[in-house]
Amino acid sequence: MSAASCLLTEDQFLCSICLDVFTDPVTTPCGHNFCKTCITQHWDKNDKCQCPNCKKTFNTRPELQVNTFISEMAAQFRQSAQQKASSSSSEQQVSKPGEVPCDVCTGTKLKALKSCLVCLVSYCETHLEPHLTAKQLKRHQLIDPVENLEDRMCTKHDKLLELFCKTDQMCVCMICTYSDHKTHDVVPLKEEYEGKKAELGKRDAEIQQMIQKRRLMIEEMKRSVELSKKDADREIAAGVQVFSALKESVERSQAELIDTIKERQRETEKQAEGFIKELEQEISELEKRSSEVEQLSQSEDHHHLLQSFPSLNAAPPTKNWTGVSIRPPSYEGTVVRAVNQLEETLSKQMKKLLEVELKRVQQYAVDVTLDPDTVYPYLILSDDGKQVKHGDVKKKLPNNPERFDKCACVLAKQSFSSGRFYYEVQVKEKTDWDLGVARESINRKGHITASPQNGYWTICLRNENEYRACAGPPVGLSLKSRPEKVGVFVDYEEGLVSFYDVDAAALIYSFTGCCFTQKLYPLFGPCVNDGGKNSAPLIISPVNHTE
Image 1: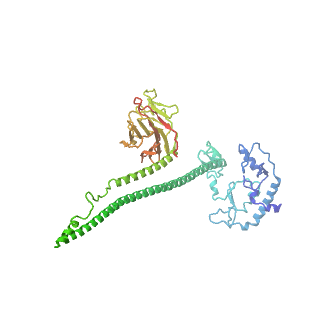
Image 2 (image 1 turned 90 degrees about the vertical axis):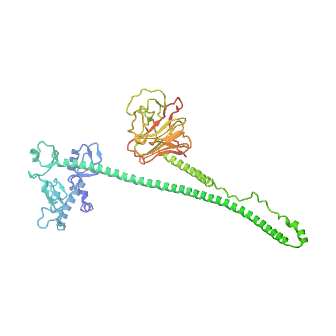
Image 3 (image 1 turned 120 degrees about the horizontal axis):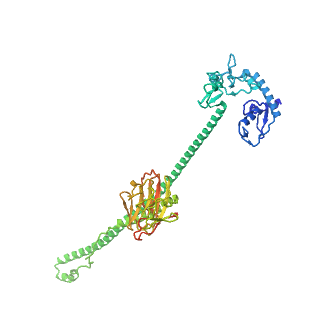
């Protein structure tokens, strides 16, 4: 037995409830050991029978029997501990400054091992022995050594502060409950301790949750920064590639222009050189003939002059140079044509970039439906909330604050106050329309001037071919083609509203540098019917992502 007990540690003989050596140890069905009194009192105070160690719950309260084997082991350990304490008291540590000394030691004070809340005394290992062995002392509450145990006594009644006044939020003794705290809500100190401990546990759980939430936010921010960096690197690489191609194209066009001009100059020089060579040859022949004529004219030989005269009197054969000249080449339009060709190249590159951009913004497509509570009474909505047109007949609708009463407009049900969103609207066969977004607080009554200052970021078509951005003042738009489907993209944090010709993959207009502080609603204005000329509806179309 003694040899076996030596193989076991002190913790294995301590009850986890009272933290003392087992007294009448019992074993629960889950295999944990406790003092019989400790586990019984623990279950008496709680609504359910639960193991304090593993938290296993028993539907029926177990019948517990003293485990004689563990009881004998605990007794053996207690005896061994007593012998060890008596033999090693001289080896105990002497109390150092800042450590709690034993109140019983005389002379040299040893370091206290425990403080008793009943005796209000701190004990070293040797003087603590009675509290571990004496039955009447084993029930005393021992805690880690603390100084000033007298602070735990009531200064008025000199009694242990074993109760807590919830009314005054202070520790009191038993006598206090019959005097100053007679009508107050008073509970045992342990009960309040357990309640406050539970609150602290709950508070700690809340704090841990807050910490976890912030850690998740940090991770999210790091991921966002990483994604932003990847996007930035991708955009830089794409930008460098595009501008490198443009630079090469410009340099190539410049080189071709210079080569063309130089080639024309070389042809002119070559032509002139040929003519000059012929002329110099004729001059040489003429000078030779002139010399012969001069020599003959000075001859006094009558017969020789007459005989040579016929051959020298005629001029040597020469080319008719009438109308022959060197005309410098015309370079007018050469540079313009080169720039036009470069412009075509730039236009093709721009179209490719816009196709990529449109494909990206289409990733933020959202489902948008029209809100009947905001619709102008003359407008007709489809049952699915995807189409709106002017109907010429005013419907009887409640004039609620959200409804437009003079402008042929309607808002979407959906609102956006962060992030990015995109939707597409078919405007085919219409002569007038308005599209864009509006902030929540816009004025919806009376005649409205659409502008960012008034909370509208829109573009419009008037008189079949007049496109404008309602920028205050309006900006005229020159479009190469007539859009049949318009895409609207908003980046809330970036302050950006862009409009695209979806089929042509062309940018129509962008509002930039906007400051959004409210919810934004998609806005649709089919305008008046105009005798049937503008009867086609605006249709919210599903987004077909471009390839």
